[in-house]
Amino acid sequence: MKTFYMSLIIIFFITSSAFAKTGTSNAKKLELINIVNQQEILSQRITKAYLYAKKTNVSAGNADRQLKSALKNFYDTYSKINTSTKSTQIKTIMSFIKKSSNEFNNLVKQPHSKKNTEEILKLSERVLAKSKEVSTLLKKDLNKSIYEAMEKSNQQQILAEKIATYCKALQLNKNDEALKKKIQVTIKKFATNHKKLMENKQNSKMISKKLKEVDSIWKSAYPIYEDKRFINSIVFNSTTRISKKMKEISTLYMAMKKQ
Image: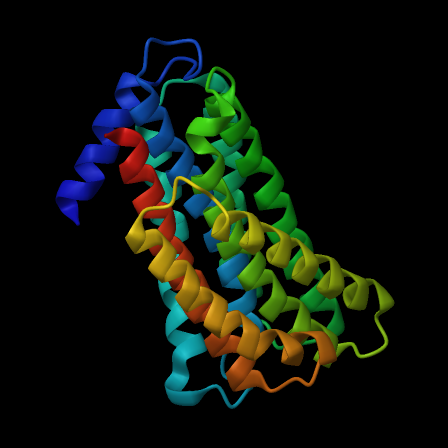
């Protein structure tokens, strides 16, 4: 793990000034995009895990462990990026991320309520938007074909976390029509991305195999998401499995582009 973080530090120093305006290789920019995407995913995972932790019947404390891990990883990611760049623009965004990390830590200590659910949902969306600003800078001089499949697989992780979050939030606020619509939109977006990834002609045999595994989980679980049956353990565990598989797929896509 230390070696991994040291590698990140080296990468960020090389690309510190303006990222897209340097002579940084496509491979290194791709790594940076992936790191930023993981920060986006963590913001959604914190929200999901908070809503399921302690108060539900998710087996063996999975949500509690996931929440603790996501909070730590979120701050660690912020810290490594912040100490590894001299870019004023990125530093400004990192200040917001640090503040958000503190807000997450405070919010997750609060009991579930309509107000707290709304607050953490809003916070996760703000973090997502800010992280995307960094991602946009990195992609500025890259051909879309270089990062498209990897980014879609990262987006699938975010969408899986969101599905679980919205299902639980709707359980707490059953008459929230906005949440009902968000679930439908998120499910549709996941299905669209999944189809495109499955049909991607550049997929390796291993990527195709893992996408089929995701397909199996998705086909079993999405009727529960659509019907909003609120089977907490199934919703939480299936979306966690999908997110884990998609992270593996994203890593494989990145490895392909670096060759």
